[in-house]
Length: 144
Image 1 (spheres, one colour):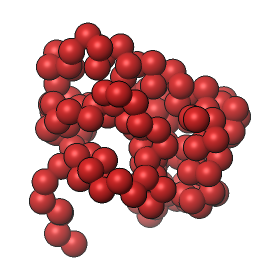
Image 2 (image 1 turned 180 degrees about the vertical axis):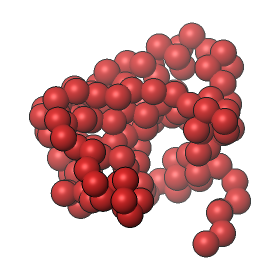
Image 3 (image 1 turned 120 degrees about the vertical axis):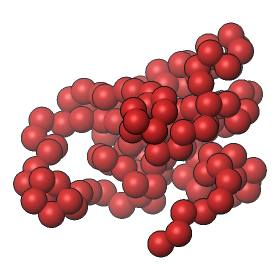
Image 4 (image 1 turned 90 degrees about the vertical axis):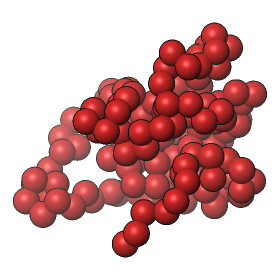
């Protein structure tokens, strides 16, 4: 399968098809999108509307709203899915694990005790107990 050209984040936010693109919330400078290939149910990402690669390129206003949306996202996930904790992180650069290296974004990944299992280790497969559409609906209510 060939990787699409251009920036995934910029493309999705310009399409104005929020439900089908799993965009949970649009702020003035950032947006929240459900990860279509999640590590766990409820895995979302916060990204600036502006195409920038590094944190230091964000304005103070973008940075402030960005982390306000990280907090809003964790609250929505906590209320809807009741995880035991969260992994929150930013991968900058390909060697750091960034799948999209030229558009900075923050991952918010809910975690539960025992959520890693043998399927991931043995067959490189992740089993998700909830469909993306269902997760989207649950989180959308909390992001409003």
